[in-house]
Figure 1: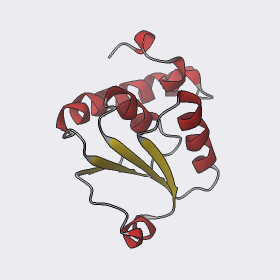
Figure 2: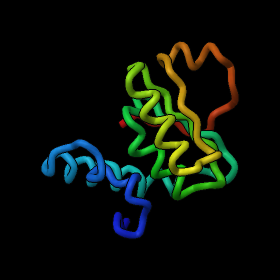
Figure 3: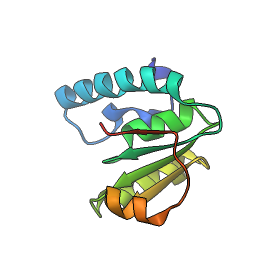
Figure 4: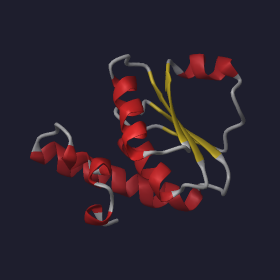
Length: 118
C-alpha cells in the first residue's frame, strides 16, 4: 500500500494524530486492509463496527468501489466526521451509521458478507 498514491484524506497521517500515533495507525490500517481487500466478495455489503473516524472503512471503500460499506460508530462526535469524509471523497458506496451493534442489527438493513472491528 502506497499512501502517496491515495487521496491524502485517506492517510491517517493527514489528520490530527501525532507523528508516532499516525505511523502506528498507518501500519494497523494497511495490515488489515491488505487482508480485507482480498476477502471482500464482489458486490457484497461489509460492516465495520467501532469505525472511529473511518480510516479503515474509507480506505476499503476506495480500494473496493464494487462493495458497499457501512461504518458503525457509537460516538456521536465521530459520525459527522465520517460523513464529512465520505462526502469530501465523493463515495457513493459507503455510509455512516450512528449506534451500537444492537442498534444496527435492529435495523435489518441488509445482509452483510463481512464484519470487522479494528
